[in-house]
Structures are given as structure tokens and as C-alpha cells.
Image 1 (cartoon, rainbow over the protein chains, first blue to last red):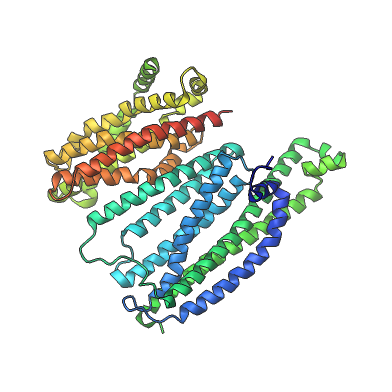
Image 2: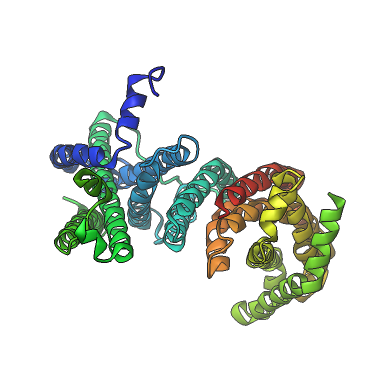
Length: 256
Length: 56
Length: 219
């Protein structure tokens, strides 16, 4: 079936078998976990040794956990959008599992981006929350995530749920540029004259390297969690199927 | 080391650590729960469809 | 197609609910605003366009679950989608009928509520104009949410949650255009045209995606 496709595509289809995926996950998760811990150790060490920023003082340390969280929040949604395409276009059996597994993770990262952004903004601007373009866009992204999670939980029938969640994810994805554009527009309309953007400082290597390492750590963490969550979802479906069959078959199932 | 901003930096790191740790713990607990469910089901005689096919 | 439109309109008007509830909700939100912010007329006229638009937005959102529900419950939705006309066109007509009976009454009711908020004529006119070209976008975007939540209990609330982030651009451009019409330096035409663009864009995309979703979820 996949002769004409690139080897990586056929490998994706090899993984369509849940059992094979579970075996792969069992092997990958420990490796990713170790890599995550190592990256966090390196990133935190480099970050905490960074000097104070000229403008932002030591609060630049918050950047090392704010920017990766925001970056992951968006990367996670992109992954969900690709998985949604997998559900709708290619009908890959594990695509829906991927979306469901990723949504709570994305929401968590978005939440972290907001909280750390707020804690970064308070010493900078004196208020706990500021409706600047980026924080506002991240807040809207959080609402989108939570809506998808709520929708996934509300629909009982698995294939309808998969389709609906995929559609909403993709419609959200299409809208994100529009929302971003409109929020930026809105922000430039209302921005007072002398506000400095909540932006990373001039990217000296001494700030850039810890940031990159922390971003790598967060990314590895995400993929570790994503595989764990996908594994849990597959097992959950197995349990559900077995329960249904046990209820339907009654004692006949034992006889065979 | 953090100067006046410790009151912001420390909570930021602590909350991040708590959220990330909770994720791992939650996923791990879910995994254990599912494995327990599967064990329970196997013991009570339910079989997976592919296992049933293999027995025929 | 015209037969379908008249059918939809007749159905919507017979149940009557949409327009009445929408306008009533509009009234409710506008009425409680002064209790929250105080009766200072100057303040009210300043936030007036925003309050009007928030009410219009919410009234539209909360009425959207009726878009497909009645037909889905009695099975006629399947028949319509499998019928001679393309499913997208069917959904488009349903959206138009829904807007005419839910969105348009809100536009027409705007002057009254604008007066309650002590708004001046240019502001009221701007809100009406932006509501006229912007509320269709809400209906079309909402159609996707309605299609996805069509047979869910409490679907209306879930619909509102899912659709709300997607219609934020409509709100932003509408209020921005209104301010532009009232306060000179800000532009009116740019956001107004963006609103029109949104409505046109989603007039195609919304029914397309909604129809696809409905067709593949039946049964």
C-alpha cells in the first residue's frame, strides 16, 4: 500500500497497529525521560548562571521558563492540527489518539505561559495582567484548547468524536492567524505611548543558549508526556472494548 | 542573587515545576490504573478479540 | 433553493423563538450594564458600542444551537443533506434563514438600545452597520460549531465555548470600526472592510465545513 510513499510514511502506517505502537512507546519513553532530565539540568544550570539583563534585571530568569512554555503551547497545537489532518484525510487510526493526548498537555503549557508571563509582567509593568498582544493571544489559545477538551469529553460515540474534534482543531488552526492579526491590530490601537513589549532581551549568547537548552528540555518533556498519554488512551480504549464485550458476551466469552 | 525580584522569580519556577510534575504524576497514575483494569478484566475471564481469534 | 429558503424562514418564524429571545437577551444585557458600571451617562456612551456588540455577539451565539437541532431531531436534516441540492448550499440557506430571523432583528433593535446607552447617532449608525456586515460572520463561523454539537445535551453551551475564540476578530474589527466612525483619527473603512471580508470568507468556509461534518456524522 505504501510502496510509492517515502519510508517514513510507511513507518507511520506500520505504527497504526496499536500493539506495535505500545511496544515502541515502551522503548522510547524511558530514553526521552532521561534526555528530558538531562536537558533540564543543563538548561537550569546555564540559566541560573546568566547575568542580569540591562533592562529587566534578574527577571530575565523568568524568560527561560516563559518562552519555552509559550513555544510549546503553539507547537502542541500545530501537532494537533497535523494529527487532525491524519484523522480526516488519511484516516490514520492513531491520529485521534494523538489529538486527545496532546490537548491537555497544550492547555497546561498555555496556562504556564500565562502564569509566568503574568509574573514577568508584574515587576515590569506593575500589574498582574496586561492585555498586550502576545499574552492576549495566548489566553485565546487557552480557551481554544479548553473548548476542544470539553468537546472531546462530551461526545460519546468514538468516530463522531474523533471527527468533530479534528474539525474543530483544524478550524481553530485556520483561525489562529486571523485571531493573531486582529489581536495585534487591537493592541496597536490601544497601546499607550510608552509601553515596552514583553519581549526577550537582546539575544546575547549568554541568554540565547540557556533559552535554547530550556526549549529543548520542554520539547523533550512534551514528547515524553505525549507518548505516555497516547499509551494511556490506547489502553483506556482497550479496557472499554473488553468491558463492552464482556457485558455483551456474558459467560460465553469464558467458554471460548 | 535574585534581588528584589525573588518574589516573582521563585513562584514562577515553583509553579512551573509543580504543573510539569503534576502532568507526569497524573499520566503515570493513569497508566497504573489502566494496567490494573486490564489485569482485573483478564482475571475475570474477558478476552481481547485478537486473543480470542488466536485460540480458535 | 428558494423553496428551501422559504421553508426555513417559515419554520423559524413559526417557532418564533429566535428573534424574540435574541432581542430579549439583548435587552437584558444592556439593562444590567448600568447596575454594574453606574448610571453615568458619559461613561455609558463611551462603553456603549462595546456593550451593544458584546450583547449582539452573545445573543447570536446562544441562538446558534437552533440552527440544525430541530431538523436533526425529526430526521429531516439527513433528508435535506442527501437531497438534490449540494449539502453546502443547504447549510448556506439555513444559515441565511437563521441570520434573517436571529441576527437581523438584533441589528434592527440596536437603535433603541443605543439610546439606552446614551449613544449619539453616528455611534448608533456605526454599530448598526458593523452588526449588519459582521453578524453574518458569527452565524457562518457558528455553523461549524452547531454542526459539531448538533445532538449533544447542553450542546448550546459547548457551542458557545468552542465558537467564542473564533469570533473574537469580528468583535475587534466591529468595535474598532465603530470607534473610527466616532473619533476622527481612527480609521473606519479599514476595519469595516475587514469585517466584510470575514463575513464573505466564512460564508464559504463555514457552510462547507459544517455540511461536511453533518454528512459524515449521520448514523
